[in-house]
Length: 161
Image 1 (tube, rainbow, N blue to C red):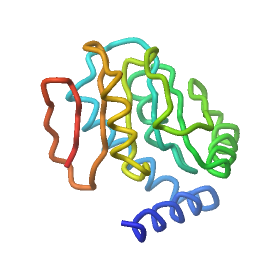
Image 2: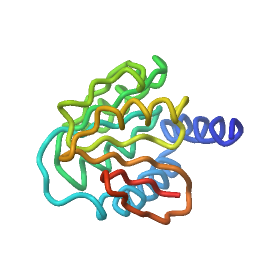
Image 3: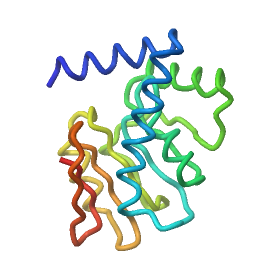
């Protein structure tokens, strides 16, 4: 698990320097995010929260791309937030803002969709915190693994596994 997190983090940092790596990430995350959203999104308007944006916040960019809703991206790493803001500035990304915060402390009241990244640590604590606040009109998407097999529970919690 730690090796995978380190590898993903290093690849995201490389994507800032190499356009070909960035375009691979964009394609991968747009497809993956589309698969997640098509099960739960029905043209709702409202803010979206992405927990665990990383240095290359392509999931947040993809959610904004597919929904055209404003997106807040939370990350606990100040370096990741700095790189995220550089990315937004360099590529003129609008409609998305970064927030330096811990995912398990976020107030989700004002969000329609909450997306938790695969690399979020401690994931179970973050998901438990969100589920304890989740209302019937909100959707929680929890990214679990690379291979997509999506199911939707009664609480509208999407957990790819």
